[in-house]
Each structure stands twice: as structure tokens, then as C-alpha cells.
Image (cartoon, rainbow, N blue to C red):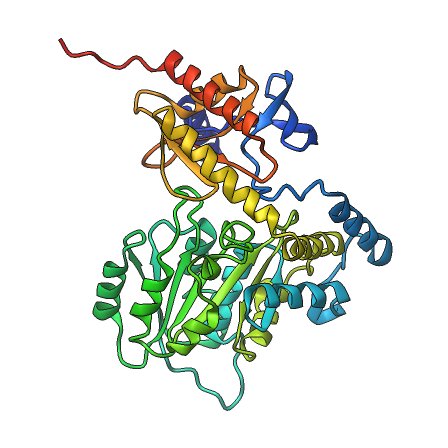
Length: 424
């Protein structure tokens, strides 16, 4: 452990450790937090991913309570061994209807869902007598994809199916961020006869707030019939499209449009943002994929999604379905906040409710965020990537007054910390 101790000491000395806070109570976007010194304060948060403001909705909380009363706090096993609860089936059916894909499998989180997909698609779960799997898999991934995708594809060639099933090789290549021309070049360069092709992308990129060019991606993949296009809609569900159904609706498409072009669409939905819960789901129109997902190591090696979490996510999807005005409010708030930031000469990249604001290189995002707390405003500093920034997430509950307060406070802190060099 000496290496760990020395590393962490240098980590602290370099200022790479995050500032951590304890939340004591929440009321909408007003949160009481406690810092490392024990100091408490009430702040206006722009950190939460509760994009539709449903984590404290009374009907969502009651659904979770009712599920506990009926099923208890946990299922205490995986669904293959001890069965699913009816709430699982209901949630899968609702997700399928919401995403326009008929077959859905639940998971505890996005990391496990993505790894299950790699095992199921690349390695066909477990060896079957009389069946020989001989086709290699080529996976192409956007260079800025979320960590759950990066982790899954990094292990795609060495997980359980590969180790125990001796299945063919998996090759992984990256393409430039949202660059469809580079995607096309990489496909042309690396595809071999009889390859099974999968392209994976975030729908909304969590650190840049921009949107994957879905129609152009479908155009490119239509040249490779049977290719698979995976969209991670963690930040798109509940946020993109007129009714919050995600990236396909945003581009006035449905997954069937991809199917009609010979492309197989897969969608991963997560419940930690719009769903006021945790957990994830993968939806497909290929019925045969679901049983492979259900026996993947990440499914049979863990408990199924707990009853209160399932019930909360289920109620949220029903609310979004019945109250699309919540999505409209979120999108209006996004446009308003971005316009106010622009008016105050902030560089806010992307186009979604994930609003990364680039700061002058002289300003440390951690110091900037700490100074904002003095104004009672909480944002997320991102200092550990190539272009440091603060990350703001606007939600449907934010008022214009609150957004104005955020921008005014940001401008004051910028003026306090930033002294531009004036050339003689």
C-alpha cells in the first residue's frame, strides 16, 4: 500500500482531489450542504441531473413507498434465480413503448448494461453445444464517449464469454468526436469480410453538452447492412425531443427508420437523470438479444433492480408520457440560460441542458466554484480534463430569477479572479 499512499499524497499536493460535500436536506433546487470543515450552508444548486425535477415529486415518492410495502426493500437475488417482480415487467414495457423498441432488459446501472451488451453481442453469452461462433466483431466508438462505454469496450475482448467460450477476436477503433466523415473512413479502413459491426455513441455528451449526428451516422452505416448502432441516451431521455423520448425524436426519426435502412438500433436508457432513480435498460427490436442480456454476468451475478427504484423510474416515465409540458419547460430553461450566459460573454459550448462553460485558462475551475459558493450558488468544477470548465445542469424547476442569479454571480466571480493582460 506504500505506492498508494505516496500517490494519494502527491494527488493532494497537486490539487487533483475533488471538493466533497454532504447534503443534509433538499427542497427543489435549494440544498443544505456541509463542506470538509463541517461548515453548513444553504445553496442554489445547478449540479443535479434531476432534469425534470421528479426526485421529490409526491407521486414518485409514494410509488417507491408502495413498492417497499408490497415487495420489501430488495429482491435479494438475480431474476434468473428468484424471478422478477411485476414492476420489472411493467417498467420494461413502458421503456419499450417510450423508445419505440419492443424488447427491453433492465440493469442496475449503465456500466453493467454496457458490459452485458458486449458479452451478449460479442460473445453470445455462453457456449452452446453444436454452435460455433466464428465471426469477429469490430467496434467503433466516439473518442468522447462516457466512461461506461469506454470501460465496456476496453474489456469487450476479455470478458467471460471470451474467457470461457473461446469466441473470436473483438477489435476496437475510435473515431473523432461527432465526425461522421472520420467514422466512414475508419469503417472503410478496418471492416473485414464477415465482420460484425457495432458503432457506439453517447446521444448527448455529458462533458460537452452536444448531440451525436444520428441521421448522418445512419446514412454511413446503411452501407453496412446488419450493422448495429448503439445510442447511450443517459442525458437525452426526458431532455431531447418534443416529448422527451430522446435523440431519435429530436431528429424527427424513429428507430424503425434505421431498421428500414438496414441498421439495427439499440438504445440504452438510464433512470438516474429523468427517472428520479437509478438503473438502466437496453432496448432492441431483436427478440433474441434479450435472453442473452438476461444471462450475462452482470445480470446473473447481481441482484435485480430493487422494488422502490423500479417503481420510482416507472412512475417517472408515466409522468413524462402524460405531462410533456415538463420537457417543454426544461428546453425553454435551457435556451434562456444559454442566452443569458452569452449575453454576459461566457463561452457555453454544446446545445443541451448540460451546459459546460469554458473559463479563461488563468482561472482554476475549483477555485471558481468555491468562490461561487460564497454567493450561495453551487456548480460542478471540471478540472481534470484537457479543457477545464464548470459544468452547469439546468432543470425544469429552475426559475428565471434563479438562472439570472447564477449568471450574475458567475460574472462577479469571473471579474474577481480574472485580470486580463493588457498589452502596452
